[in-house]
Image 1 (tube, rainbow, N blue to C red):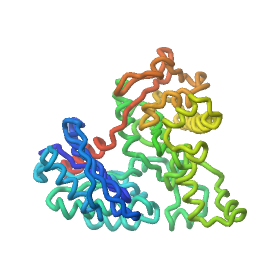
Image 2 (tube, rainbow, N blue to C red):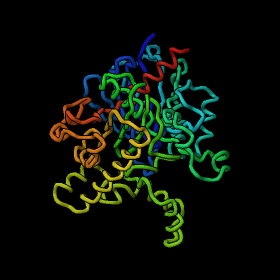
Image 3 (cartoon, rainbow, N blue to C red):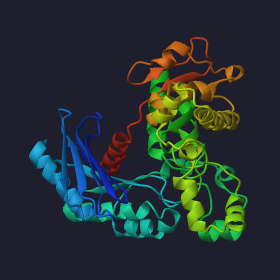
Image 4 (cartoon, rainbow, N blue to C red):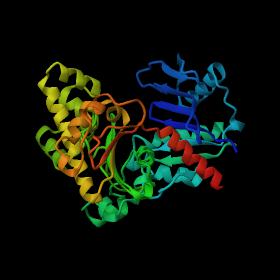
Length: 402
């Protein structure tokens, strides 16, 4: 059987794709279609990268996700490598919210689509776009098995006391109000890679994974199983992010409504799109935070302190939840490239056996790298995430399992 998997990640106005060898992780092509059905009328953009790394950018009309996927297939034909549907083992789809129904990847059929539709209220910004991707791919690759890989699935191993909110029973039983967690595909991949770097079976190690990108989350992983994670029912809870506030007082919504007359939609939009680093500093890009920090901007100093302090609190909490920690792994854009964020996030934790090698942390080698000091009881790593490869691996496993 072929090990080639076409990985599709459909967003509300974008479609990301990769052609991945699930066994080796080699990516022979990848691309991104943007401005799909753009409400402002801007022309769509497709950027396709072939095996040689050359990027091919074109502007074209993208009125729908179907048009975007057809444009992607044309890019395979034009720029390579040729994509033969008969050579695909599967099409793997990232689906954001699987609720408590999906604890593992699953073959896409009508029942799965209906279940994902029922879960739209839990992820109104994400699941509808994911459903578009499923529908388009099923139409265009009818003979190829389709597999849904859920962002929430990895965290379904959390114990009941970790995922349960202290809210009325009806909320929990009837409306699914509980912690679900996200970035599960990344957390799972990084945990596996960290165990490999330690030279130990995944089942024998406890790991804290810090996925720090524009969206950010932490997870406590015991023996390969997620026992807690910082994002909750939605991706808003937890760490400070690029534009999301992370943890705030739950009464904030009522206070802003009473004092300012804001609607729930306005408050929700502000906390999701106008807060985090953007709210603290006016910039959501961490590189801008570092630039302003170098210029001595006190607001940047405060922003980074708030950002790192929240991470440090979660590291301490998850250390307590796990009992012992073998490794901490930083991943995603900031985690992989923000040496200052890593340093501040772990500052003062030496009594917990966590010590960075300052020089290596400042300039780590490319790829997975250990950045902890030789005498650090807890190993600290930078581990580049690869969600596309993880989705491809899981899709292939489902297909081969029959």
